[in-house]
Image (cartoon, rainbow, N blue to C red; front, side):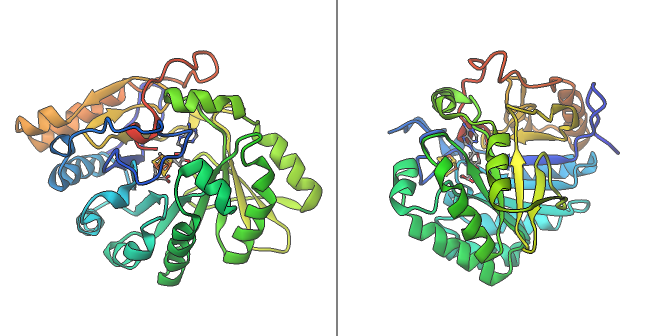
Length: 325
Ligand code: SAM
Ligand code: SF4
């Protein structure tokens, strides 16, 4: 069974948000003082999430990433992971987190079946970290070290690069990742929600960063398993791999293999568009497994050919933590 959209792309990857809440406030993601969260009663419960993911796996999806908001603010997340890890056909179960609570939860997540994680970290300067996120860097570094100690591997650090904000932290971040055995990925700022649109003022084409790093290090083209849209290089004579995720300067929509499920059960076909299908209502009305599979097949045809971040940056109203980044 395969899930193929009308542009002949096979969908193999689902991102699942388990909450739109977060314990940080990265300024390019969540509005300052925001408290307009979804009600927990409207979140999919773990049985509903498991049913939807089971349907996707029957349709050929073999890779699922749990995200948010901050997924670790949702209670008993390892219980969900244990249930998902037992689903036939699901080969790859990963997590995106800001790592503030990884110190507490890394072992339980690993035991439940998370093998690899992505951690959002835009600087290793404690004051700047606080300016960007309103949080404490120490919690994140503790979380990262615990994650490494329990055996989560690879650990990929996602750094959104913003001119005049953290572009001068790139070399420190390279050293940090090199010394700790983490993979480093740079991401271009995207105009999602008003927060993302405001941050577009700090946009940098990542090719500029790559050229700068190439003055200091020898960069060799590299590949990374489960790489998704990142293009990788390796720093010669080290184990450090660096990925470039360039949705704005060089989009990768023609090979897009993913869709996203929000915490309240909305299936979003594209990060950069409003095409969506609401699954919560039909689940709560008692849809059968066969009907659910068919509804997902049909919904996939809503997936657009490409995002329009460059042509229509005003298009996406929801900010990243609402969709599930
Ligand atoms: N809280 C978790 C975290 O921070 O990793 C998971 C959710 S977060 C929304 C997922 C990713 O989206 C993070 O790496 C974050 O930096 C990125 N992100 C949020 N807003 C963005 C924007 N406007 N442009 C580019 N990346 C963004
Ligand atoms: Fe929270 Fe992640 Fe958004 Fe930062 S990027 S505010 S950590 S959801």
